[in-house]
Length: 446
Image (cartoon, rainbow, N blue to C red; front, side, top):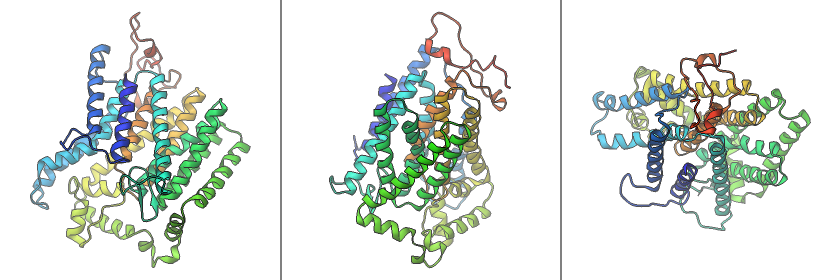
């Protein structure tokens, strides 16, 4: 049943963002919200059944602190005097949209109890990816009409959000697709994954996202390094994978529409720009002005959803930050920015530690693919504000963290000893799937 609710969540996300579907005009009763309510109800029922309220997780406290800073920024925004006519209900709705991915991470991590469900969610994410790239290409080729102008604009194609964010989403999952290509036993699975890999590369090229290309290179660099270091593939196989990626990347450029090719060439050609600021679509000047704003209020920032307003008031330009790190720095000050960095560093450290200590080859493959996609995703935030893809990122993160929890052979991170306090109930009524969970009270760090 929980797998059905998670699949329904992915379906709702696709319908609302790719097809622009609206269930009702009533605030709070969208299809996406309905799917989240269903997951909440299932989680509450599971609490009663399992007699356990919350599963321990190493990043909960960092999530809680980041959320606290953002919530605190709302009254700060009201009293600081820089903004007039602040409507509290609007601020609450903005907060709700921002906090939703974190809520989904929390709920999914607590309702997923076994490896089978983890695999089902991963398959669901792969199916979502396949459907998204297929429909994007059908729209870009003119086979079907776009349901929203976000899918195809100015010669650039995207799946469910504007092209730069869509490129970041693709980069997050490309390493996982490659793992399916090189690490599956059945030929049919490898063939399907190979076709999907080519389709995703076509979509990545079609986005025309320079930041997406850079994050893709960083992601692949980390991925190939980990594969080679952990000896998951032979060197000759690694060279074949790199050559294939380059070949299919070039082929992807050839098969895209002529309009997309021209747009991509124009965006990559530095000679068409007067300087680096022009080449980066004004991102350099936005960064400089954003740092000036931060220096004027470095401790607590200006509050939620204030970057564009402050840029207009101080510099006469109304742009978003095009940089999530800069956004947190300006809106939530050094404290909010520091907690944001700590949260993502903790995710990286947790994955890196368990990648180096797991003895399960399948886990090693999953952790390495997630880690590489995570690095690309983090790099992409230097050039784009990520909104919609955050939901898919945190769903993916919840599944990978649950895999780590279920990995009964991992050594325990000494830095997590005070945070993790799992224990297995030794009784005949215990769910057999829970027997794979770690007893964090008895296993000692190496």
